[in-house]
Image (cartoon, rainbow, N blue to C red; front, side, top):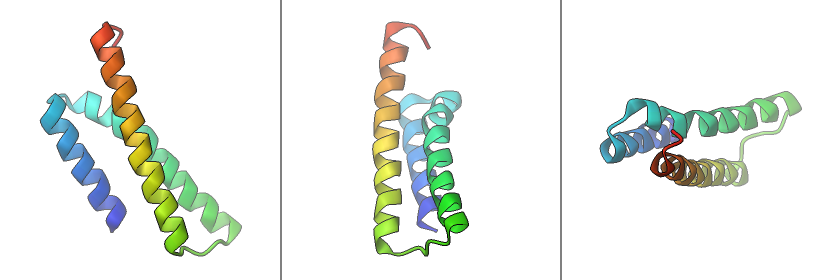
Length: 81
């Protein structure tokens, strides 16, 4: 459930700040794919979800959105997006 609330909260914040749904989706889609791949690979490898794994997923999500917004904003300001 925390993943859904994290994505929804970040999407709402990005939509509020940039008012561009495509830009907001472009910031979130790669991060959501990485976190989904993390949980999928954990399931395939038989690794149980524990507090450490949840912290790693949260860090991946937070840092990924942060870097995505930085790179996207920079590209937008330079006129290449």
